[in-house]
Length: 539
Image (cartoon, rainbow, N blue to C red; front, side, top):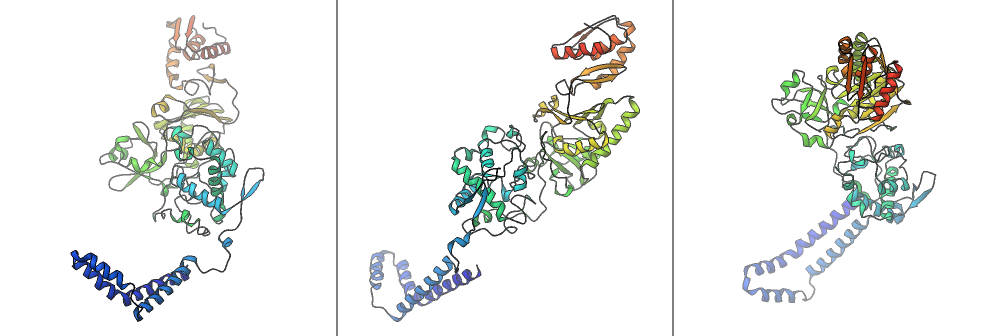
């Protein structure tokens, strides 16, 4: 490269020297052209005639300088190399499938794949990372960890034909910046299978050209140039056209979590979180301990959009960091405060400490392990409800809390050691926020219904398919109150009874007649089962 620069500079110098010898004559003609506007044709004829004059000493020197400059420019453009053309690239062996089949790519395939990748993918996958989720990139270890495996040409082509989430779930629109799944990757819809094949091969090729930090690993905001082996010149522009990484510390993008996946997001780094800037006057409530940040209180929602949902450092207008919040950007509550201490790490240890306090308080109140363990803001975990049914636990998170579910589950397993953990992301609150809806057994094997006991009465509840988290713990005190008054209410009509929480309790405590009414046959079946468990017979 240095030799090429020297040759190029030498050629330009000779051209400049040639200009010094020849320019005065041409300059005189040029100035006459500009001065005498009406006589252009005459001047042009004179200039044209002068071209055919007999060679002079200056014209001979002009020709010699032109020849020398042309030779040096040719050497600079072609390059001084005694190696054959094939030295630009070694044979690249790429896995075709996950059964061990491989293929050797040609230079033409790699060039074509590079161009297709730049046209269709480079805007989101900078340096192999992913702008919308920096924890899932294009490194071999990450492609191998996907469900199904994508670390082969056929695996990637299958993904591009039928895009899914990282762990195989179909609702890709939940984790992609596009709102509708049909709007994903419009540039790919016009591609042929061969286009997808070449582009997939190029993605796998990039992993082989960066041995120290494979394509897309390490810092997602860093670019390939400067940390990889320099690719051949015909692929070099793919790396060099990526803008250089900023000098400031990169932000930590959202780490989306999906139930049933073996993938767990990376740990929280307090100094790499995005910053949520509060509008003037909004920090007063936060300083007083108010747990919610409404949308109108956020000054920079556009800057946080690419990282949503995410943990954020909450910054006042004077620059003070007021604490840590979970930012979802959905609904009227844009963020929920987790901690009012700056730069606290939100990990399993953080949640374990909170859960220990919740557990100690509940154990003082309830003689049996059937209660709401976490009640959102009241327990310092806004947007989160956790109900305990002995050795079964049901988690009901609001939007944004999905981001920290894995450290939360780790903390639950440490503090409670449950046999079954179920997640219910189908609550009314999530529907109002427009968040993803699903319910799933996260760990253990659930065989319903589950038995719970309250006020000396047993009930059969379905934790996976029932209403709320399976039971209405928030009505415990009302059921207790009515049980104390049952002597004055011998006949009971329990409307919208669900599994008979009120009706079966009152029948157990002496009501002469109880009628339970509900629109769900499944709920009424659980009601009958609960009645049988307590040897009562409400209708």
